[in-house]
Amino acid sequence: MKYIVVEQLKTYVVLLSEDGQFYKAADLNYELGQTINNPVLMKNKKSSNLDLKWYEFKNNITMHNFKPILASLALILIIITGFFMVKNYQDYYLTPHSSIVMQINPEIEIILNRKGSVLQLDGKNEEGIIIIDQYELVNKDKTTVINDLIFMAEEMGFINDGDKVTFGINTEKLDLFEQYESDLRENIKETVTEKIKIVIEIKKANELETPTKYQTEITIIITEKETTRKTTEGSQTTTTPTTKPTTSQTTRPPVTTVAPTRAPTTTIRQDDDSDYDDSLYDDSDYDDSNYNDSAYDDSDYD
Amino acid sequence: MQAEHEIVQQVYAAKQENLVADDFIEQYKPFIKAETAKFLKRPIDEQLDDEFSIALIAFYEAIQQYSHLRGSFISFAARIIRNRLIDYWRQMKKHQGVIELDAPLTNEDETTLIDNIAEEKNLTEERINREATLEEIMELSDQMDEFNVSISEIAENNPRQKRTLRACQIAVNTALKDEKIMSQFFKNKKLPITRISNLSHISKKTIERHRDYIVALLIIYSNGYELIRNHLAQVKIVKGEH
Image (cartoon, rainbow over all chains, first blue to last red; front, top):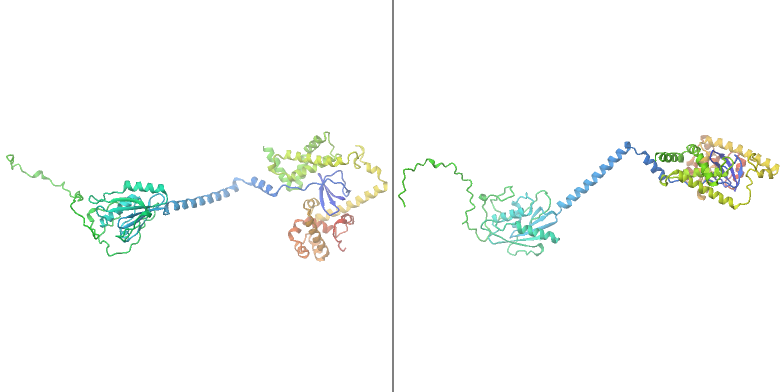
């Protein structure tokens, strides 16, 4: 193969081969226009473009044009983090996780969230719905809520002395079951009022018997987070109590305003008047220092 | 560290611009000379020693191949030079015992062995030949300047693969036969890529990529350049009608 020297530069020459290719080659004392046979051709290997671009990129990053990139990256990160935070929050706090079914006659399912706070109350039977209607869910602590509900049930006449209140805990996890069980045992008051004591029974929710005597049920749903209060819509029955203590307090409604309608069975004996709150009676004004009874001499009375 | 960084930057600049590369090489000539001397274990003459020229293009190759991920440029370049020189010596060893015909007889005069052996007639013929070729080359170079194409650049963008080479030849042939294209070509001093692509069914991308090469061939094959064309006998291009 013959080559013509078609250009000569400082460090190399350009050769034109017989097959029409141009090559850079070593200038072995060539002259322009010369035809040669044994060239030392230059290899045409180049470093990748990618590498060059990366190098240029590295060198061109200054704080000046880096700032907007940093800023938008940071913003994206914040948004993503925020998204996940909200999601976690929802999953943890707002999702129903477990529930406790309270059976008296009224059966109430208390739906709890992961943390164990009350999310929602569900009336599982008519009486349950009635109670739910009257109860305003403010406090999310399950034992407080349960105590409240028991009290309300008693006031409404659903609970009599010696009645049994069954709690069915509805959760898959054994440790959660045990935790709730001990929580209920410790904190649910057996003494609803002085006269009325209840028997507490705690079971797994799937072991609950549906009471044949009473048809109505309430489900109290306990969920975890402080969400909006939820009470289920109850169907209006004819036995709706007329006067109901619907104060917005979470604790016991004052006794003085109670006027329950009776459930078909026993009446409550009113011998106990310890509940009469006479703190209102203010007799501090009575000043009997004026009673002049010095005239009465009763020292002779034996 | 700072000096190293500067060198890398220079190399990257040299990669992109031939003139910059020339300056850079000029700057490092002493280094290149030293490396060659190291290899040959004797002092080097820039003019006479082929090895030096080879080391020069090796250095050029190093510039093209270097990536900042490969460590220090100097050591990289030294390695490439050494390898090249080894390759060259292996080739030379094949002809061991044979004196290079082009090697100068003495250091004083420039005559070579082959000069002395050759007949006077042949010598003259060859010289005439060379000088005539030189003329053509100069003219070609001038014409190509008008088109903003340099021969050096062609060497970089030459279609090497058979397939692309063939495609370029087809494109050139098609263009040569079309009067409109050729007149437009010479008038505007630009390559009418779209028209050629449409006519020859070669993709625009291919033509674009090897634009310089196609321009050179079009010029060679449309204006005299007999000697060069004779040389290119192996190239399958039909001569244009002129």
